Every structure is written in structure tokens, then in C-alpha cells.
Image 1: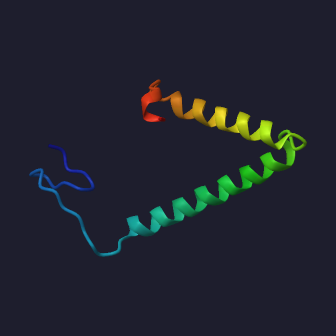
Image 2: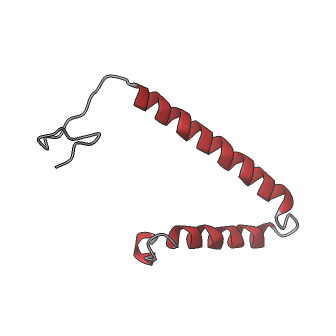
Length: 79
């Protein structure tokens, strides 16, 4: 077994409870993703079918489902 973030060379499960650079970098990545998502959401609210909010939301949901469907081509994971 190859060692990874949660297993050592012998395959034993290990996890560190002390804070590390990985934890803080993950917090930074999550924060950046949320800020990017917020900006995209606001731009879509301003420019994408702003006179038809219900249709805009339905189309947005359909686009999101299609994007989630494309990598695996499996709808069971989305339901």
C-alpha cells in the first residue's frame, strides 16, 4: 500500500490532531471558493435573465445538475 495523507507505509491508519499547514491552507481554499461563488452568483443575479427570476433559477439548477452529471455520467449520485 502506498502511503498517503491518512495511511503510513505499513497501511496503518493515522491522523494528526495538531494543527498543520494543510489545515490552514484548506481553510484558505474554502474561503476563496466561497468568495468566488458569491461573486459569480451576484453577477448572474445582475445579468442573467434578471426580469425572469424563476426561469433564471430553473435554468441555473439544470446547468448545475448537468455539470455534476458530466464527470461520472451517473444520475444516481445526484438523487
